[in-house]
Length: 105
Image (cartoon, rainbow, N blue to C red; front, side, top):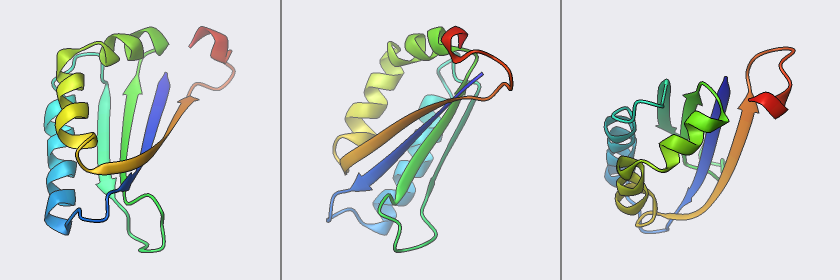
C-alpha cells in the first residue's frame, strides 16, 4: 500500500475562503478517481508551518498511482485547484506495509 503526501506553499494572495474551497474541491474531485483508495486534504493548524495545504492519498501500489496520475480528473484538479493557488510543493511517497520491499510497491 502506497501513501502519497503532497505539501503545498500557497501564493500570497490566497484567502482563507479560497483555501477552504481548495480542501473541498480536492476531496470532491479526487474521490471520483477509482484508483484512489482514500483522499485526505486540509489546512495547517500552526501558522508557523510553511505548508498551509496538504493532500494525502492511498493507493494499492505504484502502478495504481500512475494510473491515477493519468486520469483526466487528476489533470482537472491540477489545473483548477493546484496551479492557480500554489507556489511550491513537496511530494512524498511511503510504503505502509511492514516487511514489504518498496521495490514491489
